[in-house]
Length: 77
Image 1 (tube, rainbow, N blue to C red):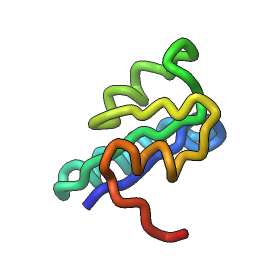
Image 2: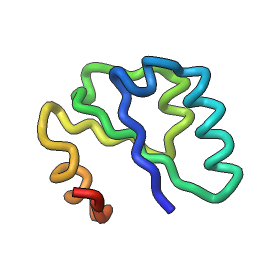
Image 3: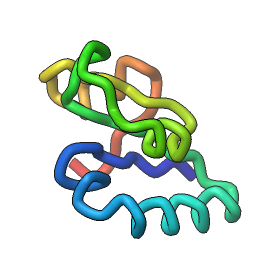
């Protein structure tokens, strides 16, 4: 199972809670994708990067389209 985790105003709102949630998810076999509207020149914190199996920088583009380009299936539209 794959979980997408936004950075600004989601992870940054309460990093401690998200780190605990991420640890529990990973212990149960989940993959965590960091998905942010930032571009690669707007870095995210190291804790977020280490929490995620991969970080996808959408550079202001629609997240669902950008993630789909990485061959992940986006559901819940």
